[in-house]
Image 1 (spheres, helix red, strand yellow):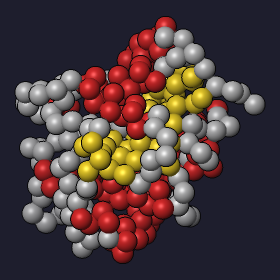
Image 2: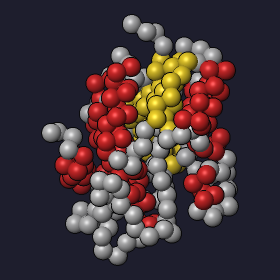
Image 3: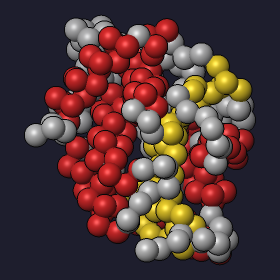
Length: 260
């Protein structure tokens, strides 16, 4: 059995994800680098190997459930355990018109929440004593279970906000099941491709956000918490509604066909 600590960071070829992977790299660590670009993935692998870690690039498009399942299959085939899982990959398109994925789901909910939900659930046999960190946002909006896909009165800001609240709810569910899981808002308008693409002037560095992620990924004795950067905080009230979380979990299982 390998003694290396295995770490998977989704969306780790750019921005906070890349800096997180680089900060977690070191001797005795095997980084699973995920992204959609093999070229960028090779560059990250080179960087983390220079820091003394070993690394594997896993290419997958998390905008489709098939892509999520393919990534999970790749991890399950390679690993006996997963010591750290950082669900970082996501999108934010607040000013864009409503978009749906190949599976027919509103894109923010699909990529930010359903992908991390399905990936985490599929990888649960490997988790054991691992740490799960979900990169969320302080921008959280209550979920409307009668219109989760926001087919009526669409707002990109609301779509993003409810997808991030859903990730918080996943975090609390995992913690209640005994998995060491936490989530955080890494910082407001950090210098990432996603922020710049939205036409927003960065107010902080990707490095600072990554440092906050790494702090949670390496912390002991903390689970089921939401952090604003490095300060423990409170998420949207709906996150602590057990009935709402049960309803969301059931809906996510149905949408992802997890239990089939």
